[in-house]
Length: 211
Length: 261
Image (cartoon, rainbow over all chains, first blue to last red; front, side, top):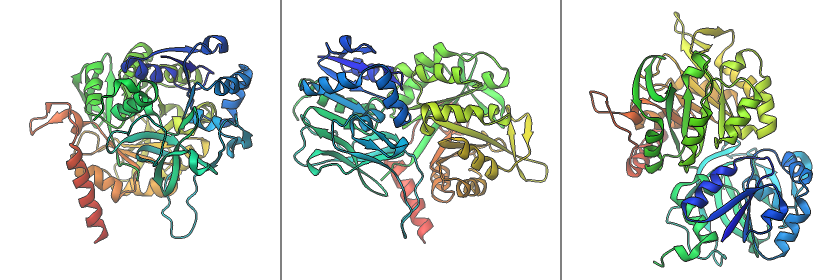
């Protein structure tokens, strides 16, 4: 298994690579689509604003290639901003995404009556719930928690595409999945053994001993 | 439900970690790489590293060390100290740091906060505010290792920093630094009320109860501390430690119940 990490000038690529290395997965960080196309799976990382992220992909002529890669049936994993870019639309910068999975990203708002006013961004460790009938190749570790940093969340996601949920004021979609496409709102690469286990489930399920 | 954020904060001086009292009397704690590895192995939720030489003496930011530190950390790291330009921030983020904390530079103007926030998003930008108690017991905003004062209140300043693009406020009490007598909950409370972004309290924690109190009573989004994570026992022997999961949950539950009464 070779994982390609998309370098489009946005965010922290080394941390993804470090964790893959830790579980024994080879990876390349590249801005070159031809080189990335050799990979068995692609990680689209990213932090920052949605508009800037789409712009960066456009400038590097990666948009079509990502579509082709997704159509090839190989795994495409978006993390944080990378997850959001997989969707159709974000209210942040009022900008269209890659449209590989149906979702519209909306800003967290806690303004209706009787609701506790929570800080935005949603920042810190939160617990997640894996939906029944998911397509991961095993369960998460018990009481799995992950590191989140985001102000926008996925809405209008088809029920069958919801993979993980978490609670922040309300229940929201912490991860989605459609066929070979996965999006995680949190940072598995910064989530200790919980993230490591999730990476194993995705990229190296053979390494997990059956319980 | 978001987990309560308790955050070890470590001070880098030269090539070692130190701990201070009221921003002075720095005592050597240990080698940064080993120390952070220990926190990683104890599943710390996140870590703040502040280079006090880079801000105090204006020494060059130690990028090599920062990159080495992030290599083995599977948790988010916030770096602060000596950040004056967007290029420096770009280098720090590229070396694997999630968030940058900007302090003294904000005393000039908020341009760097603005730029960093535009480029990396507000969630990557922490504005740090140091507050000291003046002769009349009033809270005063200070900067450059508490050598200079700003003519503003912590509340007003925090609101300005938020408007400029800070995604988080790190509110530190100089007066309580290293004292282990509890946080300045009143100041935390009023700063929390003046902004929408998360406020992290730093300075004064003597135990996990203090941390629970500043979160539950003060409304802080997180509690950062130095001493309690690096010292152990009455004689302040050096021992890297984190509260157990059970103790942490029990203490926070207890304080939340007390509050409800």
